[in-house]
Length: 119
Image (cartoon, helix red, strand yellow):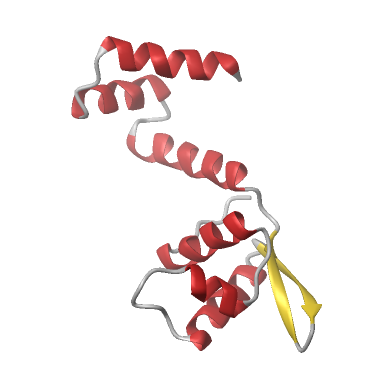
């Protein structure tokens, strides 16, 4: 999986990851105001199907859509793209950057390391 999502596609994927499966109307119901038009969401979902991020199955007179890509897999790929694009492939450089920019203290870093070690 090396395909990137647009911001609109990512918004819809977040809804589908949360709901696990949903009709176009159910996706729209979960989105913030101003709600996008039905046809807009339907078109984006079809694009997501073409990119092989979403599948569908018949339900009643319509379809329900479901993610084919796990959120964690997409997050991991996006993180690697960020690290490679902005930090010369170095996670150490990325962590250092975020520590400096966000003024993280040692306790926060230790807390993160404990979480990482749990995995």
